[in-house]
Length: 266
Image (cartoon, rainbow, N blue to C red; front, side, top):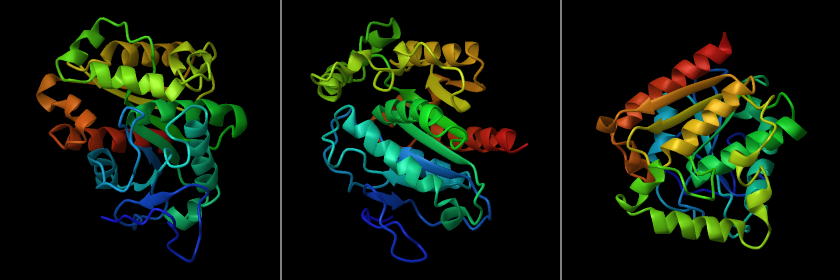
């Protein structure tokens, strides 16, 4: 575990454009996938110095080099600054693949849960538009992508105490920037999804965000994007991810990501 955010260099002093940190150690496997990770917190996290999140730990266990970006610092968790900060991190890592995996052509992913999943989806859309071919894939783990919050499954949000938090989070993130009409802020409204990086999309049967996540995955697939959709059963306790808690889902996510990487590597 490390709280070193300002400098993630392992072979010398390299300062990234925004605070970033390495989870664990760089994978010893040459050519290991690199994952740029964005945590959730419903667009309300003010400090990213907390303990490492279970999602990042699961991806490390799958053999990836995981680097978390503090997209909130300096952006106040608002659109478009937060998403732009995250994109800067991706552009930086795209030029540093050899440093973190030993190969210039290593697979590069963005990943995030909840609000971090929104950021990952927005970054993937911008990468398609600005850095075509640089992003290998996106891991969208119950991403918050619909500010309307009117789906049938969303009614469960009250049951796990997230309805008010998500409503406040959307209000804060979008502010007065009319972000709800921008596809990078609310990917669910994007009318052009073709050409975006392959996606591993995860939700669960008991997930309040199930309907919006499932719908986005289906729209990606209908646009010709390679999509691997996984709907976890309630027994895996997937909604615990919203509280930053580990659970039975970690081993399954590890295996699903490893399979996703294997398919993309073939």
